[in-house]
Length: 135
Image 1 (cartoon, helix red, strand yellow):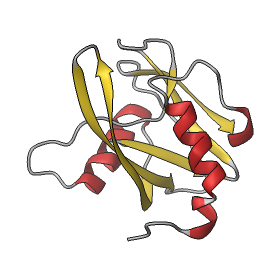
Image 2 (cartoon, rainbow, N blue to C red; image 1 turned 180 degrees about the vertical axis):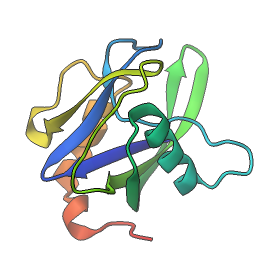
Image 3 (cartoon, helix red, strand yellow; image 1 turned 30 degrees about the vertical axis):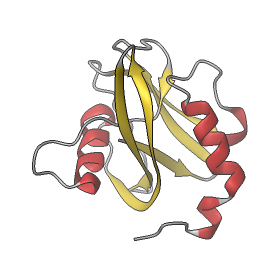
Image 4 (cartoon, rainbow, N blue to C red; image 1 turned 180 degrees about the horizontal axis):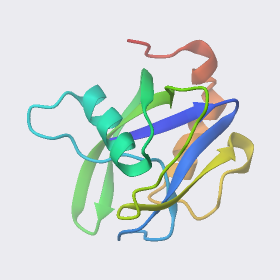
């Protein structure tokens, strides 16, 4: 699962510390623990990776992709925003070594696992303006 954390036409991305795609920018996320609800899991993952509390606004998409050769995973993407008006982002240094807000119109080219195309598609759909899939 992953989080598109957005505010003021910007998206928060982290730089991966681990393979695959170490050094690439990505949306924060991870796996659901046994017995954990997906919305709780994405809040936990963002807190662990970036030290940031988020509000889950909506479910954007669910898709399957190849994470590593021969390993396919289902990714559930949530649209989130920071919980506080003052945003202090503290990468954990283990999974994420840096974090930065990028304008949606200026995403980095070196993004992990096709995420750049997914963000561009989401932005082009205008989902954030329509409140698509709001719980």
